[in-house]
Length: 186
Image 1 (tube, rainbow, N blue to C red):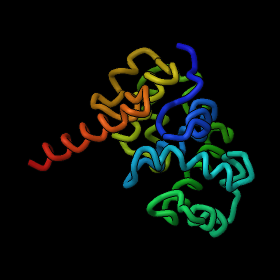
Image 2: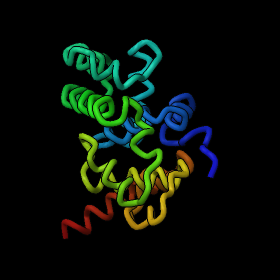
Image 3: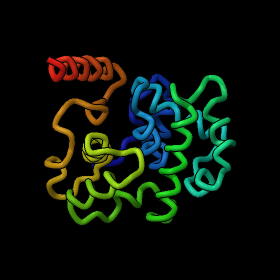
Image 4: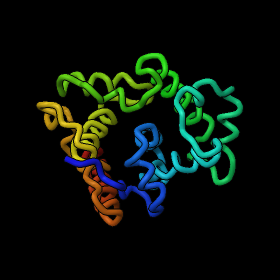
């Protein structure tokens, strides 16, 4: 499967191209995808890159004083509904990438030997629990061609950002998520 030129997760074409091109942007978008819309979460790495001088670098983000990164997240419009805590999570994720993956986001999935290995690597990321890890494995498999044997078994078996192939599809995914949550409360 060839790598896509863009992932249609936001209404902004440049942000969509960045998500397909920059593994750190994709990973940060997934990290930030909580308590905000999918579109807001996945456009945030593009805005973060702009605010950091045009580049996303895990080592540079990990090395920033947390007060500086929090200020970048809080700059209007804020990058997240909870800019302070998400700045901390972003820095924790980048620090993990530096410590365990040479600062490269794609090293999380490159060279994985099995679906279980892929899931374990993603699940070990700060800010990623089981469900988020399953969704991200699905995103990698369905959109980015990262398909170690058995990846479908460990990927989310519900509609998620991994199933978004056009921007318009986000509304369908959102409606399915609401219905799933309502059913689980019943």
